Length: 328
Ligand SMILES: Cc1cc2nc3c(=O)[nH]c(=O)nc-3n(C[C@H](O)[C@H](O)[C@H](O)COP(=O)(O)O)c2cc1C
Image (tube, rainbow, N blue to C red; front, side):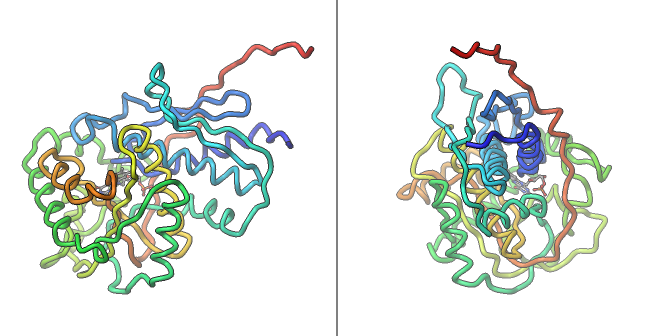
C-alpha cells in the first residue's frame, strides 16, 4: 500500500470541516494517529437546549467523517470506518483507517468536489420536480452508508410530518431558552468562523406555505417571497437506534446531500420536530416500523447561495505522538 503524503490527512480534514452542523456549531475534534483519523464529539459545542442528547451533534460528526472518506477515496485511498461504540470513550465516534488503494471513479471525484459547493439553502426553491432517477440515486446514496431515505410524498406522511414541523416551530418561537440559544449562534460578519451569518439566511415567507423553515433563520430585512408549494421532503432513517446509529445516519445524510449537490440540487433542513419532546415522540411513532428517523431534508432546485465559513482544520486537530517501536 502506498503511504499517504503527510498532508493528505490534513486535506481530508479540510473536507471534513465543511460538514453541516446545527447553527454551524462544528461540534467535532479530530485526532491524527499514524494511519487513522479519529472523530471525537466536542461536548462544549453541543446545543444544550435544542440538542441536549447530542443527537444532531453526532449526525454532524458522522457527516464530517464521511467528507474525510470522500476526500481520501477521490485520491485513490480506500478506508474502513469503525463506528462501534467504545463504552470507555463515549465521545470517540468514528475511527477512519486507510485500507489499501482503490480505483478512482467519476462519482468519487464528483462527491469530493461537491463537499465545497454543498450549502444549506434557506431561500425559495423552484416549482420543478426532482426526477424519479434522481430520487432513486439519493435513496441509493443513503443505503450505501447503512441508512435509508423515505420520501414523505411517497410514504403518505407529508401532511402529518409538516403539521409536526409547524407545531414544533410554534413551540420553539415561544421558548425563550431556545430563542436565546439560536440568537447566540447568529452572526453579522460574513466570515465568522462559526455560527450562521446573515448572508446564509432566507427571506421571510409570503403567503401560505406547505413547510415552515426556522423563523429565526429568516432575514426580516429582505422582502417576503413565496416559497415552493410542493417541496420534496425526505427523512433519513436507520434501522438501528442510539448513538452509533446517529453517526451512521450522519454519514448517510451527507452521502445524500453530496449526491444531491453533485446533481445540481439545493438542500436545507427541517429539524424543529426532532428538537421538542412533544413532536419528537409523535415523529418516532410515525416511522416506528422503519427504524429511527434522524433528520428531515428539503430537496429541490434553487439559485446557489453563499457558503458559510468554518474554523480552520488546525484549530480542531490534535496529533497523537506514538513513540516509535523499534523494528525487529
Ligand atoms: C443535524 C442538523 C440539523 C440542522 N437543522 C437545521 C434547521 O432546522 N434549519 C436550518 O435552516 N438549518 C439547519 N441545519 C443547517 C445548519 O445550520 C448548517 O449546516 C450550518 O449553518 C452550516 O452551513 P452550511 O450547511 O451552509 O455549510 C442543520 C444541520 C444539521 C447537520
